[in-house]
Length: 307
Image (cartoon, rainbow, N blue to C red; front, side, top):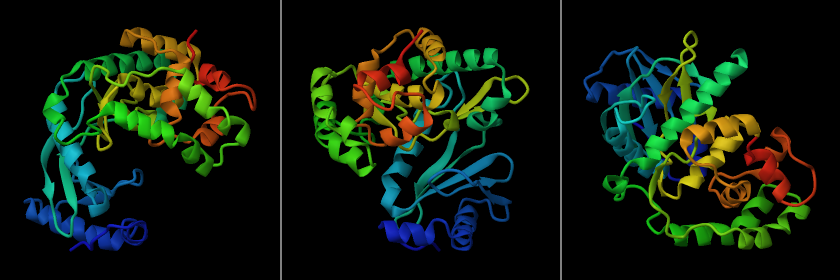
Protein backbone atom coordinates (compact mmCIF):
# COMPACT_ATOMS: atom_id res chain seq x y z
CA UNK A 1 0.00 0.00 0.00
CA UNK A 2 3.01 2.30 0.32
CA UNK A 3 5.46 3.00 -2.54
CA UNK A 4 9.19 2.41 -2.36
CA UNK A 5 11.12 5.35 -0.93
CA UNK A 6 14.87 5.14 -1.44
CA UNK A 7 15.89 8.63 -2.64
CA UNK A 8 15.48 12.17 -1.32
CA UNK A 9 13.15 12.93 -4.21
CA UNK A 10 10.93 9.95 -3.39
CA UNK A 11 10.97 10.93 0.27
CA UNK A 12 9.84 14.47 -0.52
CA UNK A 13 7.07 13.16 -2.76
CA UNK A 14 5.71 10.43 -0.49
CA UNK A 15 6.40 11.02 3.21
CA UNK A 16 4.65 14.43 3.50
CA UNK A 17 1.70 13.20 1.41
CA UNK A 18 -1.00 12.70 4.03
CA UNK A 19 -3.45 10.75 1.85
CA UNK A 20 -0.88 8.22 0.61
CA UNK A 21 0.61 7.73 4.06
CA UNK A 22 -2.76 7.37 5.77
CA UNK A 23 -3.85 4.61 3.41
CA UNK A 24 -0.66 2.71 4.22
CA UNK A 25 -1.02 3.32 7.96
CA UNK A 26 -4.63 2.10 7.92
CA UNK A 27 -3.65 -1.03 6.00
CA UNK A 28 -0.81 -1.79 8.39
CA UNK A 29 -3.06 -1.26 11.41
CA UNK A 30 -5.54 -3.74 9.94
CA UNK A 31 -2.76 -6.30 9.53
CA UNK A 32 -1.80 -5.71 13.17
CA UNK A 33 -5.35 -6.36 14.37
CA UNK A 34 -6.19 -2.68 14.82
CA UNK A 35 -8.62 -2.21 11.95
CA UNK A 36 -10.85 0.81 12.45
CA UNK A 37 -8.77 2.34 15.24
CA UNK A 38 -8.72 6.17 15.09
CA UNK A 39 -5.55 7.45 13.41
CA UNK A 40 -4.07 10.91 13.88
CA UNK A 41 -0.72 11.92 12.42
CA UNK A 42 1.63 13.88 14.68
CA UNK A 43 2.83 17.13 13.09
CA UNK A 44 6.42 16.88 14.37
CA UNK A 45 9.27 14.51 13.56
CA UNK A 46 11.19 13.42 10.49
CA UNK A 47 9.36 10.09 10.22
CA UNK A 48 5.60 9.64 9.74
CA UNK A 49 4.14 8.91 13.18
CA UNK A 50 0.48 8.24 14.05
CA UNK A 51 -1.49 8.10 17.27
CA UNK A 52 -3.54 4.89 17.12
CA UNK A 53 -6.41 5.51 19.46
CA UNK A 54 -5.37 6.86 22.86
CA UNK A 55 -2.80 4.27 23.90
CA UNK A 56 -0.65 3.35 20.89
CA UNK A 57 1.71 5.02 18.43
CA UNK A 58 2.66 3.72 14.99
CA UNK A 59 5.96 4.94 13.56
CA UNK A 60 6.82 4.25 9.91
CA UNK A 61 10.25 4.14 8.31
CA UNK A 62 10.70 4.08 4.51
CA UNK A 63 13.35 1.92 2.85
CA UNK A 64 15.79 4.85 2.95
CA UNK A 65 15.60 4.76 6.76
CA UNK A 66 14.66 1.11 7.30
CA UNK A 67 17.63 0.38 9.54
CA UNK A 68 16.49 3.18 11.84
CA UNK A 69 13.22 1.33 12.30
CA UNK A 70 15.02 -1.88 13.15
CA UNK A 71 17.21 0.00 15.61
CA UNK A 72 14.34 1.77 17.35
CA UNK A 73 12.34 -1.42 17.78
CA UNK A 74 15.30 -3.22 19.31
CA UNK A 75 16.39 -0.34 21.53
CA UNK A 76 12.89 0.25 22.92
CA UNK A 77 12.53 -3.46 23.65
CA UNK A 78 15.88 -3.43 25.45
CA UNK A 79 15.26 -0.25 27.47
CA UNK A 80 11.69 -0.70 28.66
CA UNK A 81 11.53 -0.20 32.41
CA UNK A 82 15.27 0.39 32.85
CA UNK A 83 15.52 4.20 32.92
CA UNK A 84 14.30 6.70 35.53
CA UNK A 85 12.24 8.33 32.76
CA UNK A 86 9.74 6.07 30.93
CA UNK A 87 10.42 5.04 27.35
CA UNK A 88 7.73 3.68 25.03
CA UNK A 89 7.06 -0.05 25.18
CA UNK A 90 7.56 -1.71 21.80
CA UNK A 91 4.45 -3.84 21.20
CA UNK A 92 5.49 -4.95 17.72
CA UNK A 93 8.02 -4.02 15.06
CA UNK A 94 9.23 -5.39 11.76
CA UNK A 95 8.97 -5.09 7.96
CA UNK A 96 5.87 -3.91 6.15
CA UNK A 97 6.14 -3.77 2.35
CA UNK A 98 8.20 -1.94 -0.30
CA UNK A 99 11.10 -1.82 2.16
CA UNK A 100 9.14 -0.02 4.90
CA UNK A 101 9.64 -0.84 8.58
CA UNK A 102 7.28 -0.08 11.44
CA UNK A 103 7.32 0.17 15.22
CA UNK A 104 4.07 -0.10 17.17
CA UNK A 105 4.65 1.30 20.65
CA UNK A 106 2.82 2.54 23.71
CA UNK A 107 1.84 6.19 23.86
CA UNK A 108 3.30 8.04 26.82
CA UNK A 109 1.46 10.86 28.60
CA UNK A 110 2.65 14.44 28.76
CA UNK A 111 3.56 17.27 26.43
CA UNK A 112 6.73 18.12 24.55
CA UNK A 113 9.23 19.65 26.98
CA UNK A 114 10.39 22.15 24.35
CA UNK A 115 6.85 23.48 24.05
CA UNK A 116 6.32 23.62 27.82
CA UNK A 117 9.73 25.01 28.82
CA UNK A 118 8.96 28.74 28.69
CA UNK A 119 5.86 28.32 30.84
CA UNK A 120 7.87 26.84 33.70
CA UNK A 121 9.70 28.48 36.57
CA UNK A 122 13.47 28.47 36.97
CA UNK A 123 13.21 25.95 39.80
CA UNK A 124 11.39 23.57 37.44
CA UNK A 125 14.16 23.95 34.87
CA UNK A 126 16.82 23.14 37.45
CA UNK A 127 14.99 20.05 38.66
CA UNK A 128 14.23 18.83 35.14
CA UNK A 129 17.82 19.10 33.89
CA UNK A 130 18.94 17.17 36.98
CA UNK A 131 16.45 14.47 36.00
CA UNK A 132 17.91 14.44 32.47
CA UNK A 133 21.40 14.05 33.95
CA UNK A 134 20.32 11.14 36.13
CA UNK A 135 18.60 9.48 33.18
CA UNK A 136 21.71 9.76 31.00
CA UNK A 137 23.84 8.33 33.80
CA UNK A 138 21.65 5.22 33.90
CA UNK A 139 21.49 4.97 30.11
CA UNK A 140 25.26 5.17 29.75
CA UNK A 141 25.81 2.61 32.51
CA UNK A 142 23.76 -0.06 30.73
CA UNK A 143 25.55 -2.84 28.89
CA UNK A 144 25.09 -2.04 25.17
CA UNK A 145 26.39 -5.43 24.00
CA UNK A 146 22.91 -6.92 23.32
CA UNK A 147 22.38 -4.16 20.74
CA UNK A 148 25.78 -4.34 19.04
CA UNK A 149 24.32 -6.26 16.08
CA UNK A 150 21.97 -3.40 15.14
CA UNK A 151 23.72 -0.24 16.36
CA UNK A 152 26.84 1.27 14.84
CA UNK A 153 29.40 2.38 14.31
CA UNK A 154 31.29 -0.71 15.51
CA UNK A 155 34.76 0.84 15.46
CA UNK A 156 34.39 4.13 17.32
CA UNK A 157 37.94 5.24 16.56
CA UNK A 158 37.51 4.76 12.82
CA UNK A 159 34.15 6.55 12.97
CA UNK A 160 35.71 9.45 14.84
CA UNK A 161 38.63 9.74 12.42
CA UNK A 162 36.28 9.72 9.43
CA UNK A 163 33.99 12.35 10.92
CA UNK A 164 36.88 14.60 11.96
CA UNK A 165 38.44 14.38 8.49
CA UNK A 166 35.14 15.49 6.96
CA UNK A 167 34.34 18.19 9.54
CA UNK A 168 35.59 21.20 7.56
CA UNK A 169 33.65 20.31 4.42
CA UNK A 170 30.57 19.40 6.48
CA UNK A 171 30.55 22.81 8.12
CA UNK A 172 31.48 24.62 4.92
CA UNK A 173 28.35 23.09 3.45
CA UNK A 174 26.34 24.63 6.29
CA UNK A 175 27.83 28.05 5.56
CA UNK A 176 30.19 28.38 8.53
CA UNK A 177 32.37 31.48 7.95
CA UNK A 178 35.98 30.90 6.98
CA UNK A 179 37.24 32.59 10.17
CA UNK A 180 35.84 29.59 12.07
CA UNK A 181 36.47 26.98 9.36
CA UNK A 182 40.19 27.73 9.24
CA UNK A 183 40.51 26.91 12.94
CA UNK A 184 38.84 23.50 12.83
CA UNK A 185 41.81 21.27 11.80
CA UNK A 186 44.18 22.60 14.47
CA UNK A 187 41.44 22.66 17.09
CA UNK A 188 40.47 19.05 16.49
CA UNK A 189 44.13 18.02 16.53
CA UNK A 190 44.62 19.78 19.87
CA UNK A 191 41.75 17.98 21.62
CA UNK A 192 42.34 14.32 22.37
CA UNK A 193 39.18 12.25 22.17
CA UNK A 194 39.27 8.56 23.16
CA UNK A 195 39.36 6.18 20.19
CA UNK A 196 38.53 3.13 22.29
CA UNK A 197 36.21 4.40 25.04
CA UNK A 198 34.17 2.34 27.43
CA UNK A 199 31.19 1.68 25.13
CA UNK A 200 27.95 3.38 26.11
CA UNK A 201 24.47 3.24 24.65
CA UNK A 202 23.89 6.71 23.17
CA UNK A 203 20.63 8.41 22.31
CA UNK A 204 22.62 10.92 20.12
CA UNK A 205 19.78 13.51 20.03
CA UNK A 206 19.31 14.50 23.66
CA UNK A 207 17.01 17.51 23.20
CA UNK A 208 14.08 19.08 25.00
CA UNK A 209 12.05 18.07 21.93
CA UNK A 210 12.55 14.38 22.77
CA UNK A 211 11.33 14.57 26.37
CA UNK A 212 7.73 14.64 27.59
CA UNK A 213 6.64 16.43 30.75
CA UNK A 214 3.47 16.51 32.83
CA UNK A 215 2.07 20.04 32.76
CA UNK A 216 0.83 19.90 36.36
CA UNK A 217 3.52 18.01 38.26
CA UNK A 218 6.42 19.26 36.08
CA UNK A 219 7.77 15.71 36.07
CA UNK A 220 9.35 14.06 33.04
CA UNK A 221 7.01 11.43 31.64
CA UNK A 222 8.90 10.16 28.63
CA UNK A 223 12.06 9.98 26.52
CA UNK A 224 11.41 9.37 22.83
CA UNK A 225 13.03 8.79 19.43
CA UNK A 226 15.80 6.23 19.69
CA UNK A 227 16.15 5.50 15.97
CA UNK A 228 19.53 7.32 15.71
CA UNK A 229 20.94 5.48 18.75
CA UNK A 230 24.58 4.43 18.63
CA UNK A 231 27.20 2.74 20.77
CA UNK A 232 30.20 4.93 21.54
CA UNK A 233 31.75 7.56 23.78
CA UNK A 234 29.31 9.10 26.25
CA UNK A 235 30.53 12.67 25.54
CA UNK A 236 28.78 12.39 22.17
CA UNK A 237 25.41 12.59 23.93
CA UNK A 238 26.41 15.83 25.65
CA UNK A 239 26.54 17.67 22.35
CA UNK A 240 22.73 17.72 22.31
CA UNK A 241 22.64 18.39 26.04
CA UNK A 242 24.55 21.66 25.79
CA UNK A 243 22.91 22.88 22.59
CA UNK A 244 19.32 21.76 23.06
CA UNK A 245 18.70 21.08 26.77
CA UNK A 246 20.73 23.59 28.77
CA UNK A 247 21.18 25.81 25.67
CA UNK A 248 24.35 27.52 26.79
CA UNK A 249 23.19 28.15 30.36
CA UNK A 250 26.25 27.36 32.53
CA UNK A 251 24.23 27.00 35.72
CA UNK A 252 21.86 24.47 34.14
CA UNK A 253 24.81 22.58 32.65
CA UNK A 254 26.45 22.45 36.09
CA UNK A 255 23.23 21.18 37.61
CA UNK A 256 22.85 18.50 34.93
CA UNK A 257 26.45 17.28 35.04
CA UNK A 258 26.38 17.14 38.85
CA UNK A 259 23.37 14.84 38.63
CA UNK A 260 25.11 12.88 35.88
CA UNK A 261 28.24 12.46 37.99
CA UNK A 262 30.78 13.81 35.52
CA UNK A 263 31.50 17.10 33.75
CA UNK A 264 33.20 17.14 30.35
CA UNK A 265 35.60 19.88 29.33
CA UNK A 266 34.02 22.43 26.97
CA UNK A 267 36.72 21.91 24.34
CA UNK A 268 36.07 18.16 24.43
CA UNK A 269 32.39 18.72 23.77
CA UNK A 270 33.01 21.19 20.95
CA UNK A 271 35.46 18.69 19.44
CA UNK A 272 32.62 16.17 19.59
CA UNK A 273 30.19 18.72 18.12
CA UNK A 274 32.07 19.77 14.98
CA UNK A 275 32.17 16.24 13.48
CA UNK A 276 28.77 15.19 14.91
CA UNK A 277 26.52 13.65 12.26
CA UNK A 278 23.84 16.32 12.80
CA UNK A 279 26.13 19.24 13.62
CA UNK A 280 25.21 22.71 12.32
CA UNK A 281 27.36 25.38 14.05
CA UNK A 282 26.02 28.32 11.96
CA UNK A 283 22.58 27.60 13.41
CA UNK A 284 24.03 27.36 16.93
CA UNK A 285 25.84 30.69 16.47
CA UNK A 286 22.55 32.31 15.47
CA UNK A 287 20.41 30.71 18.18
CA UNK A 288 22.71 30.62 21.20
CA UNK A 289 24.87 33.20 22.90
CA UNK A 290 28.41 33.05 21.52
CA UNK A 291 31.00 35.56 20.32
CA UNK A 292 30.73 36.45 16.63
CA UNK A 293 34.48 36.04 16.27
CA UNK A 294 37.52 34.79 18.15
CA UNK A 295 38.93 31.34 18.81
CA UNK A 296 36.85 28.17 18.95
CA UNK A 297 37.39 28.09 22.69
CA UNK A 298 34.87 30.94 22.95
CA UNK A 299 31.82 29.04 21.61
CA UNK A 300 33.02 25.96 23.49
CA UNK A 301 32.78 27.86 26.78
CA UNK A 302 29.55 29.62 25.79
CA UNK A 303 27.73 26.41 24.86
CA UNK A 304 29.24 23.83 27.21
CA UNK A 305 30.75 25.69 30.15
CA UNK A 306 29.57 25.27 33.74
CA UNK A 307 29.21 27.75 36.57
